[in-house]
Image (cartoon, rainbow, N blue to C red; front, top):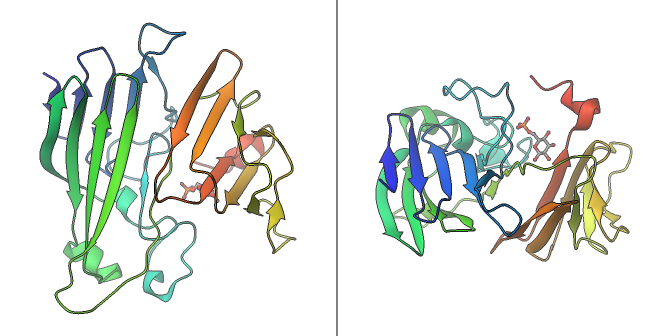
Length: 251
Ligand SMILES: O=P(O)(O)OC[C@H]1O[C@@H](O)[C@H](O)[C@@H](O)[C@@H]1O
């Protein structure tokens, strides 16, 4: 069965061995296993904390949480009743459809629409469609935000994937970010933007950097492993790793 619909999650299996799991809670991808040249057997590519709650009691600490309609603490007046990173990662999404099921890819669509609970904190006419596609060596996540208003009402939003890549934090690095402007969220004494001087950005110390106008094509590499990340229409990229310093404060 390439697509298994369980009560709380969807499991996708690719005929060549890759697999992924998507929780209906938050539409959070909690596992992606794929092979590569170094590993003929599929290996897990995403990090999920051993302490993560997967029962829908709080946003999943790991995998790929979906962030909408605000990133970080809300700053826009429309988001004033929301918590950090918005509500999409902590709502129950609905199954919509199977999009594709063949050797090229196995793909499903989930949907999130305003419920009474959401409208109480965010009364905007939105619909989110989320398509997760598993290919032999690739996982694609596409978020489509629709303004369902029948009038001229508009709204501003931020949307992103909060991907936790499974990598050794003492030796992983990300390229190419050199020369880009970034907000260093670990440095509250400095309000402006810094310029990235490093050819390869590591996360050996607590890192929380928001790069703007980034190239949308990155190599995340470590000795003996790595992963390529591509994005479309997502021009900012965040490199975050709490390390022990900030990690010890996370539940
Ligand atoms: O604890 P949360 O809400 O999942 O956020 C985790 C982190 O998410 C990152 O994307 C932010 O840049 C950090 O500032 C934040 O701490």
